[in-house]
Image (cartoon, rainbow, N blue to C red; front, side):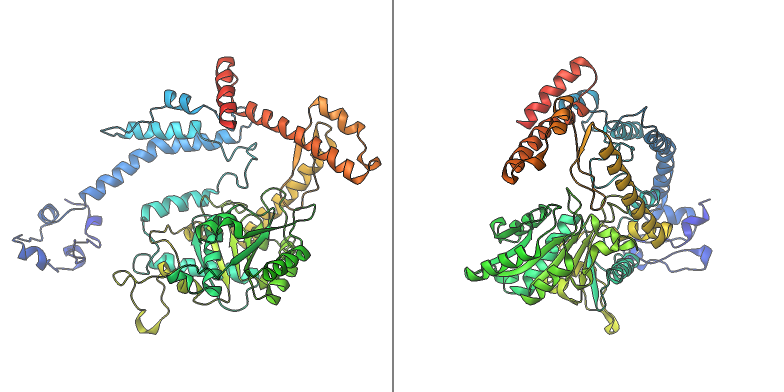
Length: 526
């Protein structure tokens, strides 16, 4: 007999059902017209109609794979806690990787080859959950998010129409609405999840461009448009990339000077805006940063917001790194004035620990702006909303068609931890950064560049040859220009030390492999 579960919601190629167990006797007329004789005997029916046996085989394979792979994953995660026994990376050069791992693609596959591939992936990848992984603005991933990522793959849908992803379409709107209210947006909140903060920043620029230069969407740039945008000299490189992609060119991005902490100087911004206007250019967009990549600086959003209002410019805030401060009552003051911005980017896959990738763009009181800038005619896919209800075909807002429901990862992590749990995670990161900075400050082997503004701790290792030099040098006794010159020279030498340390962190402890690794590393560095 066929298991009863096979007959609960049995689906035919035409979407009809045939399930005698639940009282349905709807036979498939389309199959009769093709000469197929339908019978309700369970085994014969499954033999005639494309059966669920294939799906049962997939379930069995899933069981086999989990039986083999889950212990490997569990062991891998356990090893990450043993910092002294396992390195962050088992570094190999590209040639060594190809020699040690079968990276080729087989004609015939097997579960054994699959499992071995999983084992190699874990062995030779960077352990981002390792306590000593401190090189990036993310680390590890949340177990709830890991399960959510798996669930997303099992469901395997795209979030372009409500018909293809009804549940995820509602989730995405719900999550974006909540984030917008946490930012202080009082009126209409809109947005879209995106594959990374760089992509979200680009979409923000496209929406702003469409508002100030609506003809570009269909006709392209005109010679008299002369657009120009502004960001800080410490901003993420994605701003320049967005200018390249949108056809303005990276030369139309003005890098506004920053203060000693890396924050955009509002007075300098307004000077640059006036200078651009006087030269016949058209300023229309400012991108400020909430948590810069290097120093973790937060631009003064409230002051920049006033400037943008005076000059009728779109204000975007790249909060990919530091935007998580909205969850913290203690640190959300770093985002003072954010309620007045036009758009905001947040990467929950950074400080909130949601697995890669999870990024979202949120718009403040710009109803329909995403559709106006990004939608195209696709009658075969997008249809008018029924009963005058609001359309939830989110593909009209996105530049993508196929798009993963990344909202699921954030939603399930939020369900697991709650707003307060996220707040505790953010507060802990800020507390640890202050403690770490104090450890660096007290250790003569290291040189702290500045007190941390947020979670970034910037420091150098001081080799003995430079350690005493720093002690002997009293820059306060020198003229300002001479002190700056000597400090710049000192930082340049420290930069060379950093490269040597970075190289030695990557190459093998084996003498032969170290030599090969060092030669490869220096060749790569030019």
